[in-house]
Amino acid sequence: MKRWSTRDSAKIYNLPNWGDDFFSINKKGHMCVHPSPSSKYSIDLRALVDDLIKRNIKPPILLRFMDVLQGRIAAINRAFKNAIAEYEYPASYQTFFPIKVNQQRQVVEAIAHYGKKHHMGLEVGSKPELVAAISFATGEKLPIICNGYKDNDFIEMVLYATRIGYDITIVVEKLFELEKVIALSRQSGIVPKLGIRVKLSSKGTGKWATSGGDEAKFGLKISELLAAVEILKEHDMLDTVKLLHFHIGSQITKIDKIKNALIEGTRIYVEMRKMGVGLEYMDIGGGMGVDYDGSKSSDFSSANYTIDEYANDVVYQVKNICDEAGVSCPNIISESGRATVAHYSVLVTNILNTNTQNALPEFDEILENADELSPTVRKLVDIYKSLDRHSLRVDYHDTIQLIQEAVSLFNLGYLNLHDRALAEWLCSKIFIKISGIVERLKSVPDEFQEFQLSLRQTYFANFSLFQSLPDSWAIDQLFPIVPIQRLNEKPDIMASIADITCDSDGEITSFVGENGRTDYLPIHKIEAGEDYYVGFFLIGAYQEILGDLHNLFGDTNAVHVSFNRKTNYKIDTVINGDATWESLKYVQYKGPEILKHVRDTLEKGVASRKISFEETSHFLELLDKALVSYTYLGSI
Ligand SMILES: *Cc1c(COP(=O)(O)O)cnc(C)c1O
Image 1: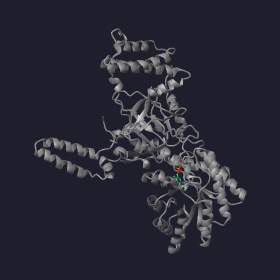
Image 2: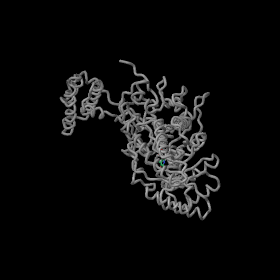
Image 3: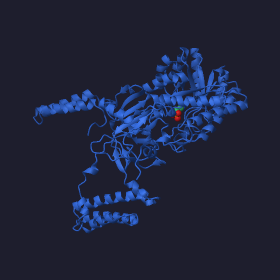
Image 4: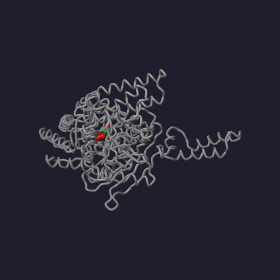
């Protein structure tokens, strides 16, 4: 048989198709991260994690690769730059990063910093997000676009921000907002920079299709748009409207949906310009998809186009329609959040396998000497010995029948516990043998496809699905999951990945495989005492902020890593995950009060001589230690 190579591993995890050349496997069989696509430099993930553990940073660890973030920003801007050159587009392109996708200060800071040369801006959708954006924009002169519901305070803050020099566009989502903006603008004498969001009848695809279309939550209907133009005209404010906005949903899987929206949106732009509205920008919202499973399909975890195709389509469609109408082209803005940040973070954690397989009793000798066994068990021994490709189906059915028979005999008192254990043991040996045969079949009958799945093991990983991969739980989104070591060895085991919450939903049973979605993760058998880690990839968008405190598992440790030519990598910063007292604080418990209460209660036991003060003191020490330590599992 051919030796297993790292190339085989790359194939079964579909790495080349979702990694966008940021990830690869090195000669040692370790996963690597590249600072830019296909760069000859790389950071060995396993070596990095080993170093972090030596620095006493414990898993689960969220790794944020700043170079990857920079690489994605560059890729999106390059795609638009090329498209603009190719179609001789006479205006510009800018990304406004929608900070709801990842509001972490260090992330937005990095975007503000790297994005400067691409004139990136920030998009906000709430008052707290506006405050966050304003904190960056002071030093960095970042432009801001405000979407979302707005109250008087929000609008007033935006107006005064405009007055004191911020470049800030307020997007009207509802007619009543327009009336508020006009009233507050008159009152303060401040001229706003306005945008108008329209509801297109074009819809996206997949999970977020209803962000577009007539029943969308936000935006003005076309009749409302005309009413808005009238109101603005009345107040002589038509020239304050600089931006037309639409957003048809996130993760749009089909390029033709994007085309339809662009055609409709640009037609609206053209008509509004003809009506004398001072539009200069067209903001096409978010929706640029990430191909999580690498299938380049219209599955909702994929996208059937690349960044380049997206940029080309946008630029081409807008230019075409504007040229036809004889209206000058707008500067194009996209609010691509997912596509900007998905790639740059990776969660790594340890598998907690306790290797119960190795602890099974040794029954092997009965295979040699089966004479004295009960007839049921003896029949199983015979099947195990004679099983081959030709007898597969019959032997499989007989085995199932025999194991049921063993349970019945046990319940009736005809089989002892030892023989029942033997029957169980033989059954799993037979199943493993069947599985080996099935794997080599050219075409696998339906019955055995299900059978293979029934052999799937559960690997426990030290993390909470609800905290770290909420979309995997909520909407069954796929994220690539790959062991970060031993990729030069064949992974023999099919597994699901369960988390450590006490929730049966905390299990991943869909994975990125060679041909799209699969029901199991190929993974290695873990040796006793081995430290074995898996990486969860492409989790930089939405997952951090949507995560919750199920079972009080808190934020994970996060480490910002950048590439360094001399030392390979540099740790920019370490952000400690929540300690137990921090998780408890969200639900109104106070660490010191817990300690005090427990101590006082225990003293009563000491007074009545039920327990010694040494015992209570040791217990309080343990409690104190638990409060200040990580919410995830330590050594087991
Ligand atoms: C959520 C949102 C985005 C981000 O969409 P992505 O698909 O992540 O790029 C952009 N604009 C608006 C208005 C949004 O609500």
